[in-house]
Every structure is written in structure tokens, then in C-alpha cells.
Length: 498
Ligand code: 5AD
Ligand code: SF4
Image (cartoon, rainbow, N blue to C red):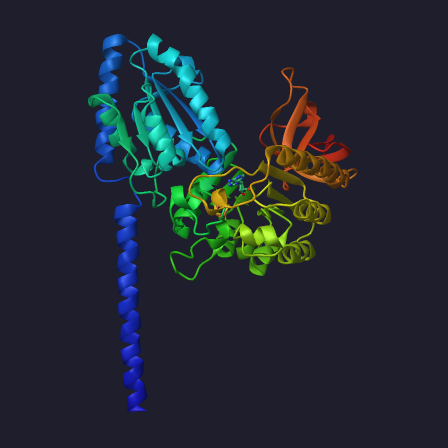
């Protein structure tokens, strides 16, 4: 017995030691790494002074224009960069030609954005000639790729290039931009923690994005994200919960939680808490609002997740679950770590548990070695699931990813032909899915008008389906009930009922 007690007390002390160490690590992370870096508040003040002096002398303000090339997570980062710029005294403009500071926040996921950025930079030479004080800043993960960083260095019109870690020292970088000569390039350290308490300029008054984690550990063979955004880092649950509470208090009604793979939320923190727990806790916040989330990796989507969605009335009954391909051979080459059968089993489980659940997905067409037979398996999966909507992508090789150097790259005419067939099938599936709403009453969060005369109002259902209806009975930015009378593949139409 004594022996047992001695082991127990020994173990307890080990556990305690471990906890203290963990606690210290957590506190250190919170205090040091998860807020704006050292002295950044001082830099905000310094830039404010520069801008104030300039405005006093000239009588004009310094305007910034910010544009995002990328996903919602990039959009949310741009909202934070804009919030910081406004804290520094810059004023926003929606017209790039009136801007004194242009900031492009970029994404590396697809080649398309790169071509767009390079084109736009060419056109900005004219702005630079007309306004020699104009500063052009590029940031985000696109330049974390060595070939893009190299290419962009020769663009004389660009004044500053910042990588994915930009947020933590952004005020200091802006101060340098206005006080030092020469191009500033800072592309170190991709492994960034999501920061807390960054002023955010929300682009919408009822819909808000909340980034809950950054990075990705999955290394899908076609994808550049893990190389340019680093490993997964989760925000602490109480930080996320208090941000959402604050948004709800401010009147936001549609909140989307963002992460490359929200299903692995908190795995890096090792605190015995997961994404489903977060959904349950957010669901407890008082008020009428919706919780959405993206993106879910099918390999990490658990039964617990679907059970939680079923039980939480504020969590939308819609799951964005990228399948990428219907062929097991291609899924293996993609390093997705699930089979089409496992994917279909998830969908089946969710449909059984969650009344009226809908799915959307991402599909890549023309992955290296994809044959007609592989592609037909994708069509067959799309047919079986009946997605409510699809984001379809032509495979594009991304530098340094394993798929880019695989043999059997698919010719572009074959990719396009398959892409069009997939779109055609999806259009048909979307209309079939939307026809199911005819005669039903759906709850819509109204978000705007479709015409200048304001005769037709538009909004979205829980499942993210666009609904249009005569505006006279609707109230903007509110939940209304609409009885559906007609459906197209891109929207459903009806009338407000009391
Ligand atoms: N080519 C085409 N599509 C891609 N995606 C990611 N990388 C590539 C690529 N190299 C798509 C995937 C992912 C979505 C965000 O972008 O479908 O889910
Ligand atoms: Fe890219 Fe795969 Fe990570 Fe998604 S899960 S960001 S596709 S590596």
C-alpha cells in the first residue's frame, strides 16, 4: 500500500509539474506571441503623427485602398490590415485612383490570382507617375513562394513586400515605409500564430468572419498552403467565444468560423477541447444568430461533429465538405486520406442525423493522370450526393508541390471539357435540390436589394441558398419567413409570410 501511495504521489507530482509547464507555456504564448509584437502600439502612434502633420500642412487626408485576392481567410486578414491602417490614421477609399497607399493581400492557392496581380501591377505604373507619393504594398502568401518573390522584386512600382506573418509587425512596417528609402522586403517566418485584439474593419454589418486557426498540416499533394502558411495554430476557445459574443452584441447575425481545416481545431493546443466543443459553446451565446464554418476536411469530420450540428439550433445545417475527386486512385495521389466510400458514409450519417442538411464541395478537375474513368467516378459521386453547390477548379500546378512534378499532366483541352461536363451536371443537381423547397417556408436573413428601385430583396437560408422575394414585406438585415414558389439553379423565389 505504501508502495502504491508513493507511486501515486510521485505520479501526481509529475502530472502537476507537467501541468505547470504546460500552463507556463500557454501563458507565455498568450502574453508574448498572440498579441501585436513589441512596441507596435508605439508605431501606430508614430504613423498617426506623420499622417496628422501631413494633413495639417496640406489640408488633405492620406487614403488607402485594400484589395483581397483569395479566400475568406484572406478577406478576414484584409479586414484586420484595414483596421490597423485606420487606427494609424489612414482613410479608406473605394477608388484605387484616389489612393495614396494601395495594399494587395494575396493568395497562392491557384495560379489565376498570380496572373491577375501581375496584370494589375502593370496598370498601376500610370498611377505611380501621376502620384509620385503613392505607395504600393503587397502582402500575403503569394510572395512566400520563392519564384513569385523573385519575380516581384524587379517590379519598380512596388514599395513593400510582406509575407504571411505580416500582422504582428504591420504598424512598424508602415512606419518604415514612410521613413526609410528603398524597397522593403520581409518574407521570414511563415509559421504565424493567429493574433488577438487586432482592430478589424468589418466589410459587412451583419455577416462576420472569425478566423479560429491558421496554417495546415495536411500536405495534400496539389496544395501550396502548408508551404506558405505554415503549421496549424489554433486560437484559444475563450478568445474565439468572446469575439463571437462581442459580434453578436454588436448586431452581427451570420458568423462564419474560418480555418483551412476547422476539424483539427485545438489539436495543436492539446487541451482536451475540439471543434464540436467550440460549436456547442458558441451555440450557448444568447441572441438570434447563425454560426457557419469552413473548411472541413472529410478525414477529420467525426460523428461527434454531425451530432453537434444536429443538436445546436444556431449552427447552420450546411456543411462545406471538399471531396476533390470521386476516384480512390486520384484521392490517394492527392494524399487526401479517405476513400469515396468513406466520404459517402459521412454524408449518409449526416443526412440521417441532421434534418434537411445540405452539402457543398470543392472538386479539382484534371489532376495529373486523371483518366476518363476517374473523372466518371467524380461525376457519379456528384450524382449520388446531390450537392447543393460546387466550387470547381481546373488543376493548376503549384511550384514545389509533389503533384506539379507528377507524370501524366492532363492537357488543358481535356481539363476544360471535363470541367464543362461537371458544371452541366451540377447545374442540374442544383436545380433538383432547389426544387425541393417549392411550397416550403424557409427562414431568410435578408441582406440587400437586387435592383436600384428596391423592389426585390435578397437573402440567404440557413443552408446558404439565395432567396429572392418582393421587398415590400421584408426588413433589411433581419430574419424573415419566406414561402417558396419557384426555383432556379442559383436561387429560389417566394413571398414573405407572417
Ligand atoms: N489546382 C486547382 N485547385 C486547387 N485547389 C487547391 N490547390 C489547387 C490547385 N493546385 C482548390 C481545392 C481547395 C480549394 C480551396 O482550392 O479544391 O479545396
Ligand atoms: Fe491545402 Fe489540403 Fe490543407 Fe486544404 S487540407 S489547405 S487542400 S493542404
